Length: 265
Image (cartoon, rainbow, N blue to C red; front, top):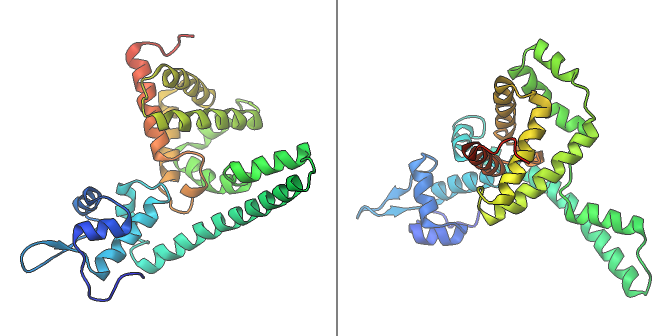
C-alpha cells in the first residue's frame, strides 16, 4: 500500500490522503469500522493497520453499500484486507473491460469523423450504448441474484400468483430504466419534495403496484428483496438501484402521501 510502515498520520493528514473529510473518519470510528491509535498525548492517529481498515471501508462504500452492511461484512466474510482487495479487483476488472471497449469505439468514431466520413445510425447507436450507458447485467445474472432472494421472502404460492399477472417484462424493464434515469437526475438536485420529484414518485409507485397489486405485505417483501440484493457486495455493483436512490424515492413517496396526492393526475 501507499502508507509507510510504522508511520502514523493525524486525522487531517489521513483524511487528505484518502480524499475524505475528518468528519467521515469520526463517523467511521463511531460506527466501529476503524479504531485510531491514541498518541501519548491522547491525539487520534492512523497507522498502517488503521489505514488498511479505512481502505476496506472506502472500497466497500464504493460498491454502494451502506455503512451498517459494511460493518457486518467486515466482521464476517470480508474481515480481511485480502478479501476486500479480491472483491475490489473483480469490480475494477469489470469496469476496466467496459472502459477499454468504450475507448476503442470512441477512437474509431473519432478517426472516421476526422477522415471526413459520416457515422451511420448503427455506429451512433452502438457508440451511445457502449460509452454513455452503464453496462447492464444479463437476464441470467439478474435471475441468479434475485431468484434466491424472492424464494427467501415470498411463499411458493405468492411467487405463482405474481407470475400469473402476465405483464411484458421487456416493456416493464424499459419503463423502469426511464424512471431510474429520472430519479438519478432529480436526486442530483436534492429535493424529494419538488413538483418533478412528486410526479416521479406517483409514477414510481404505480410501477411498483404492477407487481405488488397494491398489497402492503407484497410491497414490504419487495423492499426486503432489494435491500438484501443491495447489501450483497457481489450483487450491488450490478444493480440499477442503490440505497441512495431508494432513500430519495422513499422520501418523495412519503411526501406524496403526506400531501394526499398519491392518485392525483
